[in-house]
Amino acid sequence: MKTPIKTENHIDAEIGQFIINVQLAAKSSTSSIPSKILFMIKYPADLMKLIKIKRKACKKWLTIKYQGDKAKFNRLNNLLKKRIREAEKQDSFREFINKLTMNENTDYSLWKLIKNLKRSQIQKNLL
Image (tube, rainbow, N blue to C red):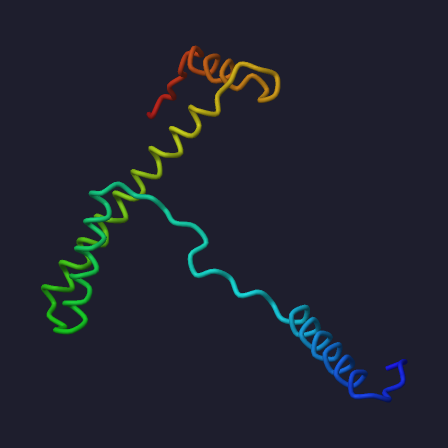
């Protein structure tokens, strides 16, 4: 506080500046709150339906604690994991195919793929 506080207006101005300084210090010293959903994975409708069925089976198993319900939940969970893996493989393959180009920027990735496909496959003797 370098300015002398003589009048009521000076006091109000200094209080306002003090509040601004405290707010800036609080904002700079605290970390930002991350959003709850950073990204939403889009799955096909059949996978979303399977997720809903799995959640219902989990809720039923947690409330009743019947072993048959647990087995059903585990079966649905494993099926869902398998289907998600398959969907991700298809998406990553589709993405890989879309990124293939014939130009120098991508190091001629399309031509490298074709060259590897043309190469004869050497089979190892298993005996």
